[in-house]
Length: 238
Ligand SMILES: [Zn+2]
Image (cartoon, rainbow, N blue to C red; front, side, top):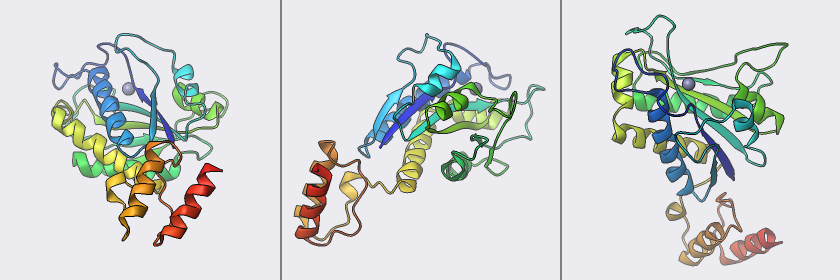
């Protein structure tokens, strides 16, 4: 399992009108590093589209950087076009027009809604640009290399409560942890220390396989016996 994470913007970009200390770029840079930490705890390999907060990168190439990954995630906070709006408060996960991202997108939208406690329900959406193509360059880029794309808008930084929530580092950490858990559940991956097996030997063998990159963290179905784990390891080792 390999995931490419993208922080929506670089440097100090998209200042909130509701709280001037909030910049979308800063909060999403922090969030994507926390997503990395929590995804790696599951044994998932993570790459980032940019190594430096102050460096921009063209959107299509950021999506295409996900080549070889199973999932691409671009993190954002949304804005209404009319400035401060205390009513509009919901997460939306943009997916590809061709349906790639629908299933994981629905789950992530529900996850963000529940952790942030938004006023309106989370949802998925598509946005069309020119000639039936996806509007967002990062989504076009990921689709071009065959990778499932999601662009998560973590509610609106034009709403005071959501903005203040996103300014809290502990909240960002809880959010990233819940998103990692949602992704892991979707792909059938469990934390190495949550291996629910009767045999310590089976647990050790599986943890070894995850740590050494033999196994992507996907847990074999109820390997109740030592023989079944041995069979699984031989299969994974080819
Ligand atoms: Zn954005």
